[in-house]
Amino acid sequence: MPCTGCGGRWQVWDLVVDVRSSGVSLFLAARRRKIIKGGRRPGRRYKQLGAALGYDPAPLPVAWTAPEDDAQAAALLGDGPVIALAPTANWDGKIWPPERFVEVFHALAAQIPGAKPAIFGGPGADEARRAAPVLAALPGAIDLVGKLSLPEAAACLRRSKIFIGNDSGLMHLAAAAGTPTLGLFGRSKASEYAPAGPRTAIAVAPGPEGDAPMAGLTVAEVLQAAGILLCA
Image 1 (cartoon, rainbow, N blue to C red):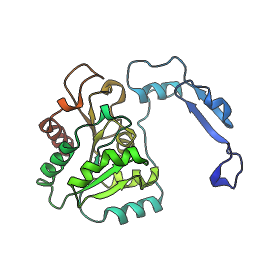
Image 2 (spheres, rainbow, N blue to C red):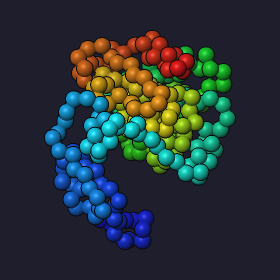
Image 3 (cartoon, one colour):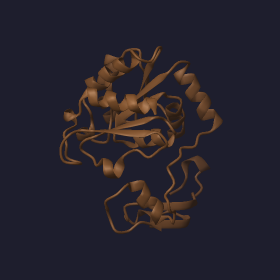
């Protein structure tokens, strides 16, 4: 397709990776392409992708930002410690109850002088709807839902003291940015999709892996995991 940011010229990609073996990558102009075949397999997803690309061991993901992204993050977040909360996900079953995010923030803020919340979410009405209860309960929060490019989001996450969020793209971006990242799991498999980064942890709802109701995950369990992560 024409690249809208390139004056309508066709975009030629250096590398296209198709992780679903969908065939869509065949329609993109690329110098190299890698179509990962074989469907879903057990084990950490980032390691599977790394192995498919010839890396052994697979490197941890890294999010790169430009100076202008870092400057934007500094302007948005200001001074003082930031607790990043990501109360959204791509479907409701993966979402921890919003009031528990609020409770966790207040508990952590009592231990971290000057801490302020930043609420992250993607673009679109569904993301806004899912983040709304947390924003309403934390009226002083920095609202970043649907307002950032990916590099800007990575830069903001990198400046945060800790990230706490559902299994989502934002969770993986936080881990790749090097932020202490706590991923919350219940309706997805932590054994496959746990955050991969230098400082990460998970809190998992009780029950069958990938089919445990998020409501079973308690505030106390999340706070315990967050405390260990912050002290690591």
